[in-house]
Length: 356
Image (cartoon, rainbow, N blue to C red; front, top):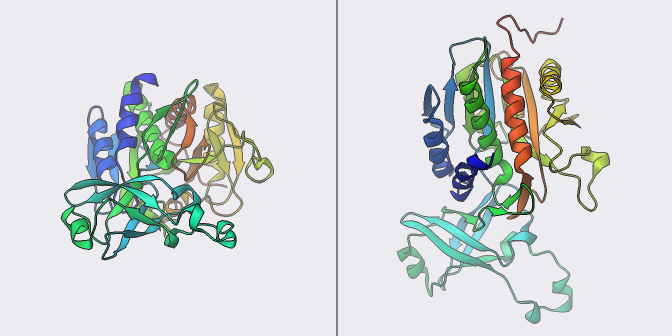
């Protein structure tokens, strides 16, 4: 996995909030073109890479390439920029952060400002800093100067936090949710190119708009387009090996403990069992996650497409989700890619996911 770190870093460095995924999608497709049979994109911003796509069963491997971000809502006459969130934010992590605004003439650096502690009344100090109480300061002195920098209402922004190596095989960065999912599905496709399955074909998809995909995001249209016989979604889940980890709610998942297989709701039981069997055969450690309602992943947008798509979910344990310093284990990414490749190789031409 160390030799793939340059690609992962390039993928993470490019800003791509939901609806603005073009830059990381281009990085993903450029890498995919090095080994895939073909690559392409669609009107929703999804990116595709195929290996043996004409073979059956055809498996869709989906990881969303978008991230949470910010959007410019107003620029006042003094040049201060007001914002709203793209996706789900804990506004507390925004305070004091540096940002990159994706202007029409290039990225513009700025900082998130708020009223200083010293000027707050005692009761104000106890209140949460909501996003509409914050602003972005790019150093401009007027609305006109902001415009000259190429910034308009509607422009997106991300926090300015790149990949950081930590102890062992752990990394921290913004956008690990879920740039690592897009990374894993492409790595799985690479493994399938190197050691092709006997029967199945695979299409990796870097899906768009998952963080705002209340009706399925780009994954829904991608599944409609591909008509897969099965799908596996790769996303992140909560690592509970931290203080106050909610193991009773989301299970026991640790960094370095291997990928997480979901059971329940949008997950087809036979796909989950195939994944578990493939993990056992390949001696890949996994943990289980129960999802009694929605999975809150692309699976929710895939499994009801057309006449139904048997869908599974494989997740990467992630600390500090939806923050500028999310943390994962590179070993977990490698094992997840191996699991997906093993799953595809395990499918026969007569594999059926119909429950009888």
